[in-house]
Image (cartoon, rainbow, N blue to C red; front, side, top):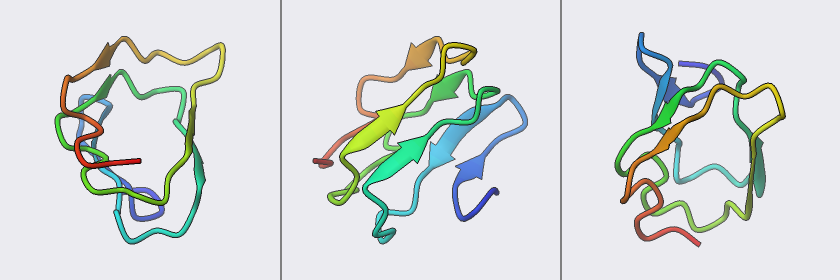
Length: 68
């Protein structure tokens, strides 16, 4: 867990706290996957940023279920 955001040992983002008031989030470069429901019910988030050196290659279908 980093600043309330849950990751697993395979560098997948498991859960982003839906009660965070932050409107922007930058993924750590090491994240390879955004799991199902990782941003479930996150209605305040507006921008998710990946840098050019990001290792992200999988965003599961329901990663942003019920999000803005």
